[in-house]
Every structure is written in C-alpha cells, then in structure tokens.
Image (cartoon, rainbow, N blue to C red; front, side):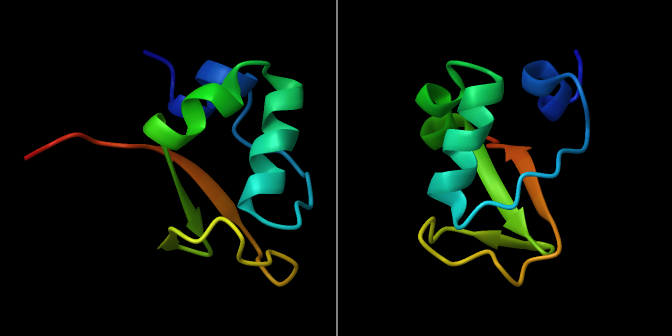
Amino acid sequence: MAPFDKEFFGTGRLDLAPRNLFDLVGKLDALAPGFAAIAQPRVHFAVDGVLETDWTRPLAEAAEVIVLPRVGGG
C-alpha cells in the first residue's frame, strides 16, 4: 500500500500555505476531490511535530503540517 499522502496526492510534499486546518482540508480536496469527505474520520494532522485537534488554529507560523492516517484501537 502506498503511503497515506501518496494515496491521495501522488507526492509527499506540497506547498499550500493554509490559514488553518479547515483551509488545508479545502486545498487538499481541490487537489484530490473527495479528500474532505474522509478527512474527519480518517486523518490526523501533526503541526510542527505535535498532533493538532483544533482545526481553527492559525497556521501562519507553522513550518510543517503532516497528514497522518488515524489508527483504530481499543
């Protein structure tokens, strides 16, 4: 199976400059239609190495956002 980012975008790096994670999801959905529909249940975002749950947090100062698959467990 291809890495998660390559599954949707065909590359491991994109330069999008989103305002926040909601904006990032919209930009990623423009590149890979349908991504927004699966983002909430299937995706975690790490902002500068820390998992971010607040999708409204401004990203202007962020150096890197990583898209990670959610891992189930229990």
